[in-house]
Amino acid sequence: MNPFFRLQRDALLGLQRLVVGGAAFYDVRPTHPCVFFANHTSHLDTTGLLAAIPPTMRDRTRPVAGADYWDKTALRRYIAHTLLNVVLVDREKGGADALLPLKAALDQNDSLIVFPEGTRRDTTLPGEFKSGLYHLSKDRPTLALVPVYQQNLHRALPKGAPFPLPLLCRSHFGAPLYNDRGEDKDTFIARMHQAVCDLADTF
Image (cartoon, rainbow, N blue to C red):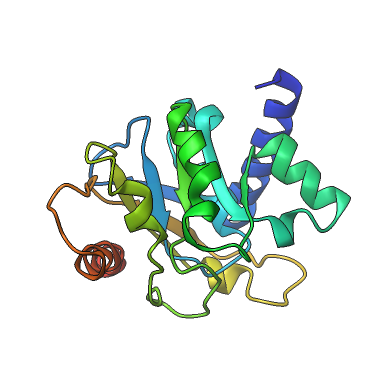
């Protein structure tokens, strides 16, 4: 990553930590490459998770987000493409085609950040997970899937709020999981969902 852009990215993450905290708790310290999957409640989720992962992983960890949102303005495009190296997906496509950019990133040995709910929810526990995590990992049984629960970000920056509030936010990283049990889609997704819910119970 260009050192100038890295400096801007780290300043953005540092500003978030200054305002809303960002303490990280690891059951097992994550290692690269992997897929982080987390609850989704706020526009602060992506930068909050990036700020919480080990600094050595940041340059090769790419958030996954909808192109319809991040390509809408010049500022969003700059943040997504230049500072955060986001993998943009066309949410209108759906199906296997929507996962092609994610699989390409994994093939390049990048780590990913995904939010399996697909949209923000103003709830303590995550809503229903979509099936993308299953299809992304079903042919990659050694791919580490790291559950993450992010606390309080929906209170720090709820939907419609122009600025974040100075509330303490934390991230709890669970032990890596794998799609190596031969489970059907629904069973696998239920296991991943429960893993994030279990982390919520620790706060």
